[in-house]
Length: 610
Image 1 (cartoon, one colour):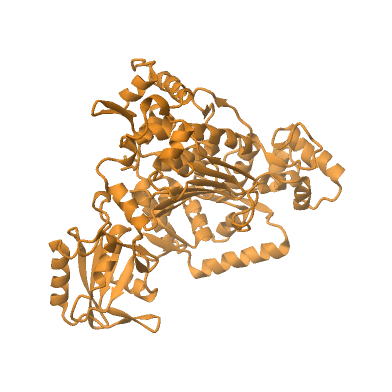
Image 2 (cartoon, rainbow, N blue to C red):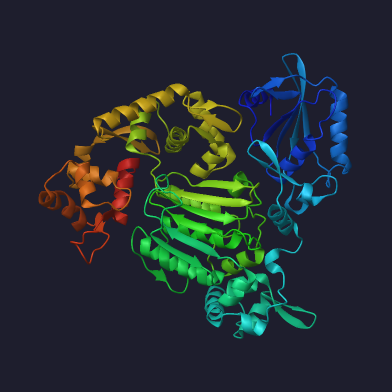
Protein backbone atom coordinates (compact mmCIF):
# COMPACT_ATOMS: atom_id res chain seq x y z
CA UNK A 1 0.00 0.00 0.00
CA UNK A 2 1.57 3.30 -1.08
CA UNK A 3 0.74 6.74 0.28
CA UNK A 4 -1.90 7.50 -2.36
CA UNK A 5 -3.67 4.21 -1.70
CA UNK A 6 -3.62 4.96 2.02
CA UNK A 7 -5.23 8.36 1.42
CA UNK A 8 -7.85 6.75 -0.83
CA UNK A 9 -8.77 4.28 1.91
CA UNK A 10 -8.91 7.04 4.52
CA UNK A 11 -11.31 9.02 2.35
CA UNK A 12 -13.58 6.02 1.81
CA UNK A 13 -13.68 5.13 5.53
CA UNK A 14 -12.95 1.64 6.87
CA UNK A 15 -13.10 -1.38 4.57
CA UNK A 16 -13.28 -5.03 5.50
CA UNK A 17 -9.48 -5.20 5.02
CA UNK A 18 -8.66 -1.83 6.61
CA UNK A 19 -8.92 -0.73 10.26
CA UNK A 20 -7.73 2.43 12.03
CA UNK A 21 -6.77 2.96 15.69
CA UNK A 22 -5.89 6.11 17.67
CA UNK A 23 -2.59 4.84 19.23
CA UNK A 24 -1.02 8.19 20.12
CA UNK A 25 1.50 6.85 22.65
CA UNK A 26 0.44 3.25 23.38
CA UNK A 27 -0.88 0.28 21.43
CA UNK A 28 -4.63 0.05 22.11
CA UNK A 29 -5.71 -3.28 23.57
CA UNK A 30 -8.42 -3.82 20.94
CA UNK A 31 -5.74 -3.73 18.20
CA UNK A 32 -5.00 -7.36 18.98
CA UNK A 33 -8.62 -8.32 18.34
CA UNK A 34 -8.19 -6.84 14.85
CA UNK A 35 -4.97 -8.81 14.39
CA UNK A 36 -6.86 -12.00 15.28
CA UNK A 37 -9.71 -11.07 12.93
CA UNK A 38 -7.46 -10.29 9.95
CA UNK A 39 -5.33 -13.41 10.51
CA UNK A 40 -8.43 -15.63 10.72
CA UNK A 41 -10.11 -14.12 7.68
CA UNK A 42 -8.38 -12.73 4.58
CA UNK A 43 -5.73 -10.38 5.98
CA UNK A 44 -5.78 -6.59 6.07
CA UNK A 45 -4.12 -3.28 7.02
CA UNK A 46 -4.12 -1.92 10.58
CA UNK A 47 -3.28 1.81 10.74
CA UNK A 48 -2.23 3.67 13.90
CA UNK A 49 -2.67 7.44 14.28
CA UNK A 50 -6.23 7.80 12.98
CA UNK A 51 -9.49 8.00 14.93
CA UNK A 52 -13.15 8.03 14.02
CA UNK A 53 -15.00 11.25 14.85
CA UNK A 54 -18.55 12.14 13.82
CA UNK A 55 -18.62 9.37 11.24
CA UNK A 56 -15.33 10.46 9.63
CA UNK A 57 -11.70 9.43 9.98
CA UNK A 58 -9.51 12.12 11.53
CA UNK A 59 -5.70 12.01 11.22
CA UNK A 60 -4.08 12.58 14.64
CA UNK A 61 -0.66 11.02 14.07
CA UNK A 62 1.39 8.77 16.36
CA UNK A 63 3.37 10.84 18.85
CA UNK A 64 5.63 8.06 20.19
CA UNK A 65 6.40 6.39 16.86
CA UNK A 66 9.32 4.16 17.87
CA UNK A 67 7.73 3.15 21.16
CA UNK A 68 4.37 2.19 19.63
CA UNK A 69 5.93 0.36 16.70
CA UNK A 70 8.45 -1.59 18.77
CA UNK A 71 5.90 -2.60 21.41
CA UNK A 72 3.41 -3.77 18.82
CA UNK A 73 5.89 -5.78 16.74
CA UNK A 74 7.60 -7.37 19.73
CA UNK A 75 4.23 -8.47 21.12
CA UNK A 76 3.22 -10.05 17.80
CA UNK A 77 6.56 -11.86 17.49
CA UNK A 78 6.69 -13.06 21.09
CA UNK A 79 3.70 -15.42 20.85
CA UNK A 80 2.53 -14.30 24.30
CA UNK A 81 -0.51 -12.13 23.59
CA UNK A 82 -1.61 -14.36 20.71
CA UNK A 83 -1.28 -18.13 20.36
CA UNK A 84 0.87 -17.85 17.21
CA UNK A 85 3.77 -15.66 16.14
CA UNK A 86 2.43 -13.13 13.61
CA UNK A 87 4.86 -11.87 10.99
CA UNK A 88 3.65 -8.51 9.66
CA UNK A 89 4.72 -5.98 7.08
CA UNK A 90 5.17 -2.51 8.58
CA UNK A 91 5.30 0.93 6.91
CA UNK A 92 5.60 4.55 8.04
CA UNK A 93 3.80 7.44 6.35
CA UNK A 94 3.78 11.19 6.82
CA UNK A 95 0.41 12.80 6.11
CA UNK A 96 -0.36 16.45 6.88
CA UNK A 97 2.90 16.62 8.81
CA UNK A 98 1.85 13.75 11.10
CA UNK A 99 3.26 10.23 11.39
CA UNK A 100 1.11 7.19 10.69
CA UNK A 101 2.07 3.56 11.21
CA UNK A 102 0.56 0.87 8.99
CA UNK A 103 0.87 -2.90 9.50
CA UNK A 104 -0.26 -5.53 7.03
CA UNK A 105 -1.59 -8.60 8.88
CA UNK A 106 -1.53 -11.60 6.50
CA UNK A 107 -4.06 -14.40 6.55
CA UNK A 108 -2.69 -17.29 8.60
CA UNK A 109 -2.33 -20.77 7.08
CA UNK A 110 -5.19 -23.20 7.56
CA UNK A 111 -3.17 -25.32 9.99
CA UNK A 112 -2.54 -22.34 12.32
CA UNK A 113 -6.11 -21.06 12.59
CA UNK A 114 -7.79 -19.96 14.73
CA UNK A 115 -5.57 -17.14 16.00
CA UNK A 116 -6.81 -16.26 19.49
CA UNK A 117 -5.95 -14.11 22.51
CA UNK A 118 -4.73 -14.99 26.03
CA UNK A 119 -4.53 -18.73 25.41
CA UNK A 120 -8.32 -19.00 25.09
CA UNK A 121 -9.68 -20.30 21.73
CA UNK A 122 -13.01 -18.69 22.59
CA UNK A 123 -11.28 -15.32 22.12
CA UNK A 124 -10.92 -15.87 18.39
CA UNK A 125 -12.17 -13.10 16.10
CA UNK A 126 -13.16 -12.81 12.45
CA UNK A 127 -13.46 -9.79 10.19
CA UNK A 128 -16.98 -9.13 9.00
CA UNK A 129 -17.69 -5.90 7.15
CA UNK A 130 -15.68 -3.17 8.89
CA UNK A 131 -15.79 -4.78 12.34
CA UNK A 132 -14.17 -7.50 14.44
CA UNK A 133 -16.57 -10.16 15.71
CA UNK A 134 -15.89 -12.86 18.28
CA UNK A 135 -16.29 -16.36 16.88
CA UNK A 136 -19.37 -18.34 17.77
CA UNK A 137 -18.98 -21.96 18.89
CA UNK A 138 -19.97 -23.21 15.41
CA UNK A 139 -17.45 -20.91 13.73
CA UNK A 140 -14.71 -22.04 16.11
CA UNK A 141 -15.49 -25.69 15.37
CA UNK A 142 -15.16 -25.03 11.63
CA UNK A 143 -11.68 -23.57 12.15
CA UNK A 144 -10.61 -26.52 14.28
CA UNK A 145 -11.95 -29.04 11.76
CA UNK A 146 -10.08 -27.41 8.90
CA UNK A 147 -6.88 -27.18 10.97
CA UNK A 148 -6.77 -30.87 11.87
CA UNK A 149 -3.74 -32.81 10.61
CA UNK A 150 -5.90 -35.76 9.57
CA UNK A 151 -8.48 -34.57 7.10
CA UNK A 152 -12.10 -34.95 8.19
CA UNK A 153 -13.11 -37.12 5.25
CA UNK A 154 -10.29 -39.60 5.91
CA UNK A 155 -11.19 -40.30 9.55
CA UNK A 156 -12.47 -43.82 10.35
CA UNK A 157 -16.01 -44.26 11.69
CA UNK A 158 -15.93 -46.97 14.40
CA UNK A 159 -19.68 -46.87 15.11
CA UNK A 160 -20.60 -48.02 11.56
CA UNK A 161 -19.80 -51.59 10.46
CA UNK A 162 -18.25 -52.35 7.08
CA UNK A 163 -20.45 -55.36 6.25
CA UNK A 164 -23.68 -53.31 6.40
CA UNK A 165 -23.04 -49.72 5.45
CA UNK A 166 -22.18 -49.79 1.74
CA UNK A 167 -24.70 -49.57 -1.09
CA UNK A 168 -23.80 -52.45 -3.42
CA UNK A 169 -25.24 -50.85 -6.55
CA UNK A 170 -23.21 -47.66 -6.02
CA UNK A 171 -19.98 -49.61 -5.45
CA UNK A 172 -20.58 -51.80 -8.55
CA UNK A 173 -21.32 -48.70 -10.64
CA UNK A 174 -18.13 -47.08 -9.44
CA UNK A 175 -16.04 -50.20 -10.07
CA UNK A 176 -17.32 -50.34 -13.65
CA UNK A 177 -16.41 -46.69 -14.19
CA UNK A 178 -13.02 -47.13 -12.53
CA UNK A 179 -11.78 -50.17 -14.47
CA UNK A 180 -13.10 -48.80 -17.77
CA UNK A 181 -11.19 -45.60 -17.10
CA UNK A 182 -8.09 -47.34 -15.71
CA UNK A 183 -7.62 -50.59 -17.67
CA UNK A 184 -4.03 -50.89 -16.46
CA UNK A 185 -5.21 -51.44 -12.86
CA UNK A 186 -5.56 -54.98 -11.57
CA UNK A 187 -9.27 -55.71 -11.40
CA UNK A 188 -10.64 -56.30 -7.90
CA UNK A 189 -14.17 -57.64 -8.03
CA UNK A 190 -14.85 -57.94 -4.31
CA UNK A 191 -16.37 -54.59 -3.16
CA UNK A 192 -14.80 -54.66 0.30
CA UNK A 193 -11.35 -55.48 -1.06
CA UNK A 194 -11.74 -52.76 -3.67
CA UNK A 195 -12.64 -50.08 -1.11
CA UNK A 196 -9.92 -51.31 1.23
CA UNK A 197 -7.38 -51.00 -1.59
CA UNK A 198 -8.28 -47.33 -2.10
CA UNK A 199 -8.47 -46.45 1.61
CA UNK A 200 -12.23 -46.01 1.84
CA UNK A 201 -11.96 -48.82 4.39
CA UNK A 202 -9.05 -48.86 6.83
CA UNK A 203 -7.72 -51.49 9.22
CA UNK A 204 -7.44 -50.37 12.83
CA UNK A 205 -6.94 -52.53 15.95
CA UNK A 206 -7.67 -55.69 13.95
CA UNK A 207 -10.96 -54.20 12.74
CA UNK A 208 -11.98 -52.96 9.33
CA UNK A 209 -13.63 -49.54 9.58
CA UNK A 210 -15.22 -47.38 6.87
CA UNK A 211 -13.87 -43.86 6.55
CA UNK A 212 -16.14 -40.83 6.44
CA UNK A 213 -15.39 -40.48 2.72
CA UNK A 214 -16.30 -44.15 2.20
CA UNK A 215 -19.71 -43.76 3.83
CA UNK A 216 -20.45 -40.40 2.20
CA UNK A 217 -19.48 -41.63 -1.28
CA UNK A 218 -20.75 -45.24 -1.26
CA UNK A 219 -22.95 -45.68 1.83
CA UNK A 220 -26.56 -46.69 2.12
CA UNK A 221 -28.85 -43.73 2.67
CA UNK A 222 -29.57 -44.45 6.35
CA UNK A 223 -25.84 -44.57 7.17
CA UNK A 224 -25.20 -41.39 5.21
CA UNK A 225 -27.91 -39.69 7.28
CA UNK A 226 -26.41 -41.14 10.47
CA UNK A 227 -23.07 -39.55 9.60
CA UNK A 228 -24.54 -36.39 8.04
CA UNK A 229 -27.80 -35.32 9.72
CA UNK A 230 -28.55 -32.77 7.02
CA UNK A 231 -28.98 -33.08 3.22
CA UNK A 232 -26.03 -33.47 0.90
CA UNK A 233 -27.64 -31.01 -1.51
CA UNK A 234 -30.80 -28.91 -1.85
CA UNK A 235 -31.70 -28.46 -5.54
CA UNK A 236 -34.26 -25.77 -6.45
CA UNK A 237 -35.54 -24.52 -9.79
CA UNK A 238 -37.19 -21.10 -9.50
CA UNK A 239 -38.86 -19.82 -12.67
CA UNK A 240 -38.25 -16.13 -12.15
CA UNK A 241 -35.32 -13.75 -12.05
CA UNK A 242 -33.17 -13.47 -8.95
CA UNK A 243 -34.18 -9.82 -8.39
CA UNK A 244 -37.90 -10.58 -8.51
CA UNK A 245 -37.69 -13.60 -6.22
CA UNK A 246 -38.15 -13.54 -2.45
CA UNK A 247 -37.44 -16.44 -0.06
CA UNK A 248 -41.12 -16.57 0.85
CA UNK A 249 -42.01 -17.60 -2.73
CA UNK A 250 -42.38 -21.28 -3.55
CA UNK A 251 -39.92 -22.96 -5.88
CA UNK A 252 -41.19 -24.61 -9.08
CA UNK A 253 -39.15 -27.80 -8.73
CA UNK A 254 -37.21 -29.02 -5.73
CA UNK A 255 -35.37 -32.12 -4.66
CA UNK A 256 -33.49 -32.59 -1.40
CA UNK A 257 -30.72 -35.17 -1.87
CA UNK A 258 -30.06 -37.25 1.26
CA UNK A 259 -28.42 -40.27 -0.37
CA UNK A 260 -24.70 -40.83 -0.91
CA UNK A 261 -22.64 -38.38 -2.96
CA UNK A 262 -22.49 -40.50 -6.13
CA UNK A 263 -26.24 -41.14 -6.07
CA UNK A 264 -26.70 -37.41 -5.54
CA UNK A 265 -24.51 -36.65 -8.56
CA UNK A 266 -26.36 -39.08 -10.82
CA UNK A 267 -29.73 -37.76 -9.68
CA UNK A 268 -28.59 -34.19 -10.22
CA UNK A 269 -27.54 -34.95 -13.80
CA UNK A 270 -30.95 -36.49 -14.47
CA UNK A 271 -32.69 -33.31 -13.27
CA UNK A 272 -30.33 -31.09 -15.25
CA UNK A 273 -31.21 -32.99 -18.44
CA UNK A 274 -34.84 -31.91 -17.99
CA UNK A 275 -34.06 -28.20 -17.93
CA UNK A 276 -31.01 -28.00 -20.22
CA UNK A 277 -31.30 -25.39 -22.95
CA UNK A 278 -31.24 -28.21 -25.51
CA UNK A 279 -32.20 -31.85 -24.87
CA UNK A 280 -29.22 -34.19 -24.89
CA UNK A 281 -28.21 -37.72 -24.06
CA UNK A 282 -25.32 -38.93 -21.92
CA UNK A 283 -22.82 -41.70 -22.36
CA UNK A 284 -24.14 -44.06 -19.65
CA UNK A 285 -20.62 -45.19 -18.81
CA UNK A 286 -19.07 -41.78 -18.20
CA UNK A 287 -22.08 -39.54 -17.48
CA UNK A 288 -20.60 -37.12 -20.01
CA UNK A 289 -22.24 -35.68 -23.08
CA UNK A 290 -20.46 -36.96 -26.13
CA UNK A 291 -19.86 -33.45 -27.44
CA UNK A 292 -19.25 -31.88 -24.00
CA UNK A 293 -20.71 -28.45 -24.94
CA UNK A 294 -19.68 -25.41 -22.87
CA UNK A 295 -22.94 -25.05 -20.92
CA UNK A 296 -22.84 -28.63 -19.64
CA UNK A 297 -19.11 -28.53 -18.85
CA UNK A 298 -19.58 -25.37 -16.78
CA UNK A 299 -22.56 -26.82 -14.90
CA UNK A 300 -20.81 -30.15 -14.37
CA UNK A 301 -17.65 -28.62 -12.94
CA UNK A 302 -19.61 -26.21 -10.72
CA UNK A 303 -21.85 -29.00 -9.38
CA UNK A 304 -18.94 -31.38 -8.72
CA UNK A 305 -17.06 -28.53 -7.05
CA UNK A 306 -20.08 -28.19 -4.75
CA UNK A 307 -20.11 -31.89 -3.87
CA UNK A 308 -16.39 -32.43 -3.28
CA UNK A 309 -15.38 -29.23 -1.48
CA UNK A 310 -18.15 -28.66 1.05
CA UNK A 311 -17.60 -28.99 4.79
CA UNK A 312 -19.35 -32.26 5.63
CA UNK A 313 -18.60 -31.68 9.31
CA UNK A 314 -20.91 -28.64 9.24
CA UNK A 315 -24.30 -30.09 10.18
CA UNK A 316 -26.10 -26.75 10.45
CA UNK A 317 -25.85 -25.61 6.81
CA UNK A 318 -26.53 -27.48 3.57
CA UNK A 319 -25.19 -27.00 0.06
CA UNK A 320 -27.68 -25.71 -2.49
CA UNK A 321 -28.16 -25.08 -6.19
CA UNK A 322 -30.75 -22.46 -7.10
CA UNK A 323 -31.58 -22.13 -10.79
CA UNK A 324 -33.22 -18.79 -11.63
CA UNK A 325 -34.10 -17.70 -15.14
CA UNK A 326 -31.22 -15.21 -15.21
CA UNK A 327 -28.57 -16.96 -13.09
CA UNK A 328 -27.66 -20.16 -11.29
CA UNK A 329 -26.24 -19.97 -7.76
CA UNK A 330 -24.09 -22.74 -6.27
CA UNK A 331 -23.75 -22.24 -2.50
CA UNK A 332 -21.38 -24.23 -0.32
CA UNK A 333 -20.83 -24.50 3.45
CA UNK A 334 -17.04 -24.20 3.60
CA UNK A 335 -14.71 -21.64 2.06
CA UNK A 336 -11.91 -22.33 -0.40
CA UNK A 337 -8.50 -22.36 1.28
CA UNK A 338 -7.10 -20.46 -1.72
CA UNK A 339 -7.77 -16.83 -2.55
CA UNK A 340 -10.00 -15.92 -5.50
CA UNK A 341 -6.90 -14.99 -7.52
CA UNK A 342 -5.20 -18.31 -6.69
CA UNK A 343 -8.27 -20.25 -7.84
CA UNK A 344 -7.55 -19.02 -11.39
CA UNK A 345 -3.96 -20.31 -11.32
CA UNK A 346 -3.31 -23.67 -13.07
CA UNK A 347 -1.71 -25.17 -9.99
CA UNK A 348 -2.77 -27.78 -7.48
CA UNK A 349 -4.72 -26.30 -4.57
CA UNK A 350 -5.01 -27.38 -0.96
CA UNK A 351 -8.43 -28.98 -0.54
CA UNK A 352 -10.76 -29.86 2.31
CA UNK A 353 -11.76 -33.40 1.23
CA UNK A 354 -8.85 -35.04 -0.63
CA UNK A 355 -10.29 -38.58 -0.46
CA UNK A 356 -13.65 -37.49 -1.91
CA UNK A 357 -11.99 -35.48 -4.68
CA UNK A 358 -9.73 -38.37 -5.69
CA UNK A 359 -12.76 -40.66 -6.02
CA UNK A 360 -14.25 -38.33 -8.64
CA UNK A 361 -10.98 -37.81 -10.49
CA UNK A 362 -10.24 -41.53 -10.71
CA UNK A 363 -13.30 -42.00 -12.94
CA UNK A 364 -12.86 -38.80 -14.96
CA UNK A 365 -15.75 -36.88 -13.41
CA UNK A 366 -13.65 -33.85 -12.55
CA UNK A 367 -10.95 -31.99 -14.40
CA UNK A 368 -7.36 -32.43 -13.32
CA UNK A 369 -6.20 -30.77 -10.12
CA UNK A 370 -6.27 -26.99 -10.13
CA UNK A 371 -8.27 -26.53 -13.35
CA UNK A 372 -11.93 -26.81 -12.29
CA UNK A 373 -12.64 -23.11 -11.72
CA UNK A 374 -10.62 -22.16 -14.82
CA UNK A 375 -12.71 -24.62 -16.84
CA UNK A 376 -15.94 -23.05 -15.60
CA UNK A 377 -14.74 -19.56 -16.58
CA UNK A 378 -13.41 -20.72 -19.94
CA UNK A 379 -16.57 -22.56 -21.00
CA UNK A 380 -18.86 -19.76 -19.82
CA UNK A 381 -16.76 -17.34 -21.84
CA UNK A 382 -17.27 -19.50 -24.93
CA UNK A 383 -21.01 -18.89 -24.59
CA UNK A 384 -20.36 -15.13 -24.71
CA UNK A 385 -21.89 -14.58 -21.28
CA UNK A 386 -20.96 -12.43 -18.32
CA UNK A 387 -18.10 -14.09 -16.44
CA UNK A 388 -18.98 -16.15 -13.36
CA UNK A 389 -18.78 -14.51 -9.98
CA UNK A 390 -17.03 -16.03 -6.97
CA UNK A 391 -17.70 -15.01 -3.36
CA UNK A 392 -15.23 -16.81 -1.11
CA UNK A 393 -16.27 -15.64 2.35
CA UNK A 394 -13.52 -16.62 4.78
CA UNK A 395 -15.31 -15.00 7.73
CA UNK A 396 -18.49 -17.02 7.36
CA UNK A 397 -16.56 -19.93 5.83
CA UNK A 398 -18.84 -20.24 2.82
CA UNK A 399 -18.32 -20.28 -0.94
CA UNK A 400 -20.68 -19.12 -3.67
CA UNK A 401 -20.36 -19.40 -7.45
CA UNK A 402 -22.83 -17.60 -9.73
CA UNK A 403 -23.31 -18.34 -13.45
CA UNK A 404 -25.10 -15.46 -15.21
CA UNK A 405 -27.40 -16.10 -18.17
CA UNK A 406 -26.59 -12.72 -19.65
CA UNK A 407 -24.53 -11.79 -22.69
CA UNK A 408 -21.39 -9.78 -22.03
CA UNK A 409 -21.31 -8.02 -25.41
CA UNK A 410 -24.77 -6.70 -26.22
CA UNK A 411 -25.98 -4.44 -28.99
CA UNK A 412 -25.99 -1.57 -26.52
CA UNK A 413 -22.40 -2.07 -25.38
CA UNK A 414 -21.27 -2.38 -28.99
CA UNK A 415 -22.99 0.86 -29.87
CA UNK A 416 -21.38 2.51 -26.84
CA UNK A 417 -17.91 1.27 -27.77
CA UNK A 418 -18.38 2.38 -31.37
CA UNK A 419 -19.17 5.89 -30.14
CA UNK A 420 -15.75 6.11 -28.45
CA UNK A 421 -13.82 6.21 -31.73
CA UNK A 422 -11.11 3.83 -30.45
CA UNK A 423 -9.99 0.55 -32.01
CA UNK A 424 -9.99 -2.28 -29.47
CA UNK A 425 -8.94 -5.90 -29.66
CA UNK A 426 -11.56 -8.51 -28.82
CA UNK A 427 -10.13 -8.94 -25.30
CA UNK A 428 -9.93 -5.19 -24.68
CA UNK A 429 -13.53 -4.79 -25.87
CA UNK A 430 -14.66 -7.50 -23.42
CA UNK A 431 -12.77 -5.90 -20.53
CA UNK A 432 -14.40 -2.55 -21.27
CA UNK A 433 -17.83 -4.21 -21.51
CA UNK A 434 -17.28 -5.76 -18.09
CA UNK A 435 -16.26 -2.38 -16.65
CA UNK A 436 -19.44 -0.85 -18.12
CA UNK A 437 -21.49 -3.53 -16.40
CA UNK A 438 -19.73 -3.58 -13.01
CA UNK A 439 -18.34 -0.01 -12.87
CA UNK A 440 -15.25 -1.29 -10.99
CA UNK A 441 -13.14 -4.29 -11.96
CA UNK A 442 -9.96 -5.91 -10.63
CA UNK A 443 -7.09 -7.68 -12.35
CA UNK A 444 -8.57 -10.93 -11.04
CA UNK A 445 -11.85 -10.07 -12.84
CA UNK A 446 -9.91 -9.46 -16.03
CA UNK A 447 -7.98 -12.72 -15.67
CA UNK A 448 -11.23 -14.62 -15.21
CA UNK A 449 -12.59 -12.99 -18.34
CA UNK A 450 -9.67 -13.37 -20.75
CA UNK A 451 -8.20 -16.52 -19.18
CA UNK A 452 -4.65 -15.19 -19.22
CA UNK A 453 -1.85 -14.42 -16.82
CA UNK A 454 -1.58 -11.36 -14.60
CA UNK A 455 0.79 -9.82 -17.14
CA UNK A 456 -1.74 -10.24 -19.98
CA UNK A 457 -4.57 -8.91 -17.81
CA UNK A 458 -2.44 -5.92 -16.79
CA UNK A 459 -1.55 -5.20 -20.44
CA UNK A 460 -5.25 -5.11 -21.41
CA UNK A 461 -6.07 -2.82 -18.47
CA UNK A 462 -3.07 -0.54 -19.13
CA UNK A 463 -4.11 0.00 -22.75
CA UNK A 464 -7.61 1.02 -21.68
CA UNK A 465 -6.11 3.38 -19.08
CA UNK A 466 -3.87 4.93 -21.75
CA UNK A 467 -6.92 5.46 -23.95
CA UNK A 468 -8.70 7.08 -20.96
CA UNK A 469 -11.37 4.40 -21.04
CA UNK A 470 -10.49 3.20 -17.53
CA UNK A 471 -9.16 4.94 -14.43
CA UNK A 472 -6.62 3.17 -12.21
CA UNK A 473 -7.62 3.37 -8.55
CA UNK A 474 -4.68 1.26 -7.37
CA UNK A 475 -2.37 -1.39 -8.80
CA UNK A 476 -5.17 -3.93 -9.20
CA UNK A 477 -8.42 -1.90 -9.21
CA UNK A 478 -9.91 -0.01 -12.16
CA UNK A 479 -13.05 2.04 -12.71
CA UNK A 480 -15.03 3.40 -15.62
CA UNK A 481 -14.53 7.21 -15.73
CA UNK A 482 -17.53 9.33 -14.74
CA UNK A 483 -17.90 10.91 -18.18
CA UNK A 484 -18.14 7.45 -19.78
CA UNK A 485 -20.65 6.32 -17.15
CA UNK A 486 -22.79 9.34 -18.01
CA UNK A 487 -22.42 8.71 -21.73
CA UNK A 488 -23.52 5.10 -21.38
CA UNK A 489 -26.47 6.02 -19.15
CA UNK A 490 -27.60 8.65 -21.66
CA UNK A 491 -27.31 6.13 -24.47
CA UNK A 492 -29.37 3.65 -22.45
CA UNK A 493 -32.06 6.21 -21.67
CA UNK A 494 -32.32 7.29 -25.32
CA UNK A 495 -32.72 3.68 -26.44
CA UNK A 496 -35.36 3.06 -23.78
CA UNK A 497 -37.36 6.06 -24.95
CA UNK A 498 -36.98 4.95 -28.54
CA UNK A 499 -38.31 1.52 -27.65
CA UNK A 500 -35.72 -0.29 -29.73
CA UNK A 501 -32.12 -1.38 -29.40
CA UNK A 502 -31.64 -2.15 -33.08
CA UNK A 503 -29.14 0.24 -34.71
CA UNK A 504 -28.95 0.78 -38.43
CA UNK A 505 -25.37 -0.50 -38.53
CA UNK A 506 -24.10 -3.32 -36.34
CA UNK A 507 -20.57 -2.90 -34.93
CA UNK A 508 -18.39 -5.95 -35.32
CA UNK A 509 -15.85 -7.24 -32.78
CA UNK A 510 -13.09 -9.24 -34.43
CA UNK A 511 -9.65 -10.36 -33.38
CA UNK A 512 -8.39 -7.19 -35.03
CA UNK A 513 -10.66 -4.86 -33.09
CA UNK A 514 -14.03 -3.09 -33.32
CA UNK A 515 -15.06 -2.34 -36.87
CA UNK A 516 -18.28 -1.39 -38.60
CA UNK A 517 -19.89 -4.47 -40.09
CA UNK A 518 -22.54 -4.62 -42.80
CA UNK A 519 -26.04 -3.38 -42.02
CA UNK A 520 -28.60 -5.86 -40.81
CA UNK A 521 -30.52 -5.95 -44.06
CA UNK A 522 -27.30 -6.78 -45.92
CA UNK A 523 -26.49 -9.61 -43.52
CA UNK A 524 -30.05 -10.82 -43.58
CA UNK A 525 -30.11 -10.96 -47.36
CA UNK A 526 -26.88 -12.94 -47.43
CA UNK A 527 -28.22 -15.46 -44.89
CA UNK A 528 -31.71 -15.59 -46.38
CA UNK A 529 -33.26 -13.97 -43.29
CA UNK A 530 -35.63 -11.05 -43.01
CA UNK A 531 -34.99 -8.06 -40.75
CA UNK A 532 -37.64 -9.34 -38.31
CA UNK A 533 -35.95 -12.74 -38.17
CA UNK A 534 -32.57 -11.10 -37.55
CA UNK A 535 -34.08 -9.06 -34.73
CA UNK A 536 -35.56 -12.18 -33.11
CA UNK A 537 -32.28 -14.08 -33.30
CA UNK A 538 -30.27 -11.32 -31.63
CA UNK A 539 -32.81 -10.85 -28.80
CA UNK A 540 -33.22 -14.51 -27.75
CA UNK A 541 -31.88 -15.19 -24.21
CA UNK A 542 -34.02 -18.13 -23.14
CA UNK A 543 -37.41 -19.72 -23.85
CA UNK A 544 -39.99 -17.12 -24.97
CA UNK A 545 -43.70 -17.26 -25.77
CA UNK A 546 -45.02 -16.39 -29.20
CA UNK A 547 -46.58 -13.25 -27.70
CA UNK A 548 -43.17 -12.01 -26.57
CA UNK A 549 -41.65 -12.73 -29.96
CA UNK A 550 -44.41 -10.84 -31.75
CA UNK A 551 -43.93 -7.82 -29.47
CA UNK A 552 -40.21 -7.67 -30.32
CA UNK A 553 -40.98 -7.15 -34.03
CA UNK A 554 -44.24 -5.25 -33.48
CA UNK A 555 -46.42 -7.84 -35.20
CA UNK A 556 -50.12 -8.26 -34.37
CA UNK A 557 -51.27 -10.94 -36.84
CA UNK A 558 -50.32 -14.26 -35.27
CA UNK A 559 -50.95 -16.34 -38.43
CA UNK A 560 -48.78 -14.16 -40.65
CA UNK A 561 -46.10 -14.00 -37.98
CA UNK A 562 -45.95 -17.81 -37.87
CA UNK A 563 -45.87 -18.20 -41.64
CA UNK A 564 -43.48 -15.35 -42.47
CA UNK A 565 -41.15 -15.20 -39.47
CA UNK A 566 -41.31 -18.05 -36.96
CA UNK A 567 -41.90 -21.21 -39.02
CA UNK A 568 -38.98 -20.56 -41.41
CA UNK A 569 -36.66 -20.26 -38.39
CA UNK A 570 -37.98 -23.59 -37.07
CA UNK A 571 -37.65 -25.26 -40.47
CA UNK A 572 -34.03 -24.12 -40.80
CA UNK A 573 -33.36 -25.45 -37.26
CA UNK A 574 -32.39 -22.08 -35.83
CA UNK A 575 -35.32 -22.11 -33.38
CA UNK A 576 -37.11 -25.03 -31.73
CA UNK A 577 -40.19 -25.62 -29.58
CA UNK A 578 -39.85 -26.42 -25.88
CA UNK A 579 -42.78 -28.90 -26.23
CA UNK A 580 -42.30 -30.27 -29.76
CA UNK A 581 -44.81 -33.13 -29.38
CA UNK A 582 -47.59 -30.62 -28.58
CA UNK A 583 -47.17 -27.75 -31.07
CA UNK A 584 -50.42 -26.04 -30.03
CA UNK A 585 -49.87 -26.29 -26.27
CA UNK A 586 -50.80 -23.16 -24.31
CA UNK A 587 -47.47 -23.53 -22.48
CA UNK A 588 -45.47 -23.69 -25.71
CA UNK A 589 -42.35 -21.58 -25.87
CA UNK A 590 -39.51 -21.17 -28.33
CA UNK A 591 -35.74 -21.14 -27.89
CA UNK A 592 -32.62 -21.08 -30.01
CA UNK A 593 -31.02 -24.34 -31.10
CA UNK A 594 -27.27 -24.91 -30.95
CA UNK A 595 -27.14 -23.75 -34.57
CA UNK A 596 -29.22 -20.69 -33.68
CA UNK A 597 -27.01 -19.78 -30.73
CA UNK A 598 -23.94 -20.08 -32.93
CA UNK A 599 -25.48 -17.68 -35.44
CA UNK A 600 -26.52 -15.34 -32.64
CA UNK A 601 -22.94 -15.25 -31.37
CA UNK A 602 -21.71 -14.42 -34.86
CA UNK A 603 -24.23 -11.61 -35.23
CA UNK A 604 -23.56 -10.11 -31.81
CA UNK A 605 -19.85 -10.77 -31.46
CA UNK A 606 -19.09 -10.34 -35.14
CA UNK A 607 -17.32 -13.68 -35.57
CA UNK A 608 -16.42 -14.70 -39.13
CA UNK A 609 -19.51 -16.03 -40.87
CA UNK A 610 -19.59 -19.80 -41.12
